[in-house]
Length: 96
Image (tube, rainbow, N blue to C red; front, side):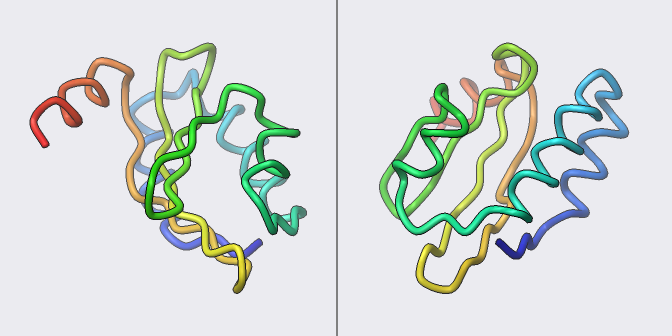
């Protein structure tokens, strides 16, 4: 998969260094993957959640943080939309 929005991940890992190794591992796994369906993501990331518009939410570091991406399965593109704490995710989605 091709990943767009690495700058968001760099910023997130800079603010939350305890998540850096998880992010680096996620990047390596995602770049090597060729996801065609949500089930293929779920096979690797059992705690991933799937929302409309091909949004995928990953629990980072045992649910301390969240990573929100949009997956274009047909073109092999993963777009990083947002990363932050679980509390920020809850607040962000309550306000929508």
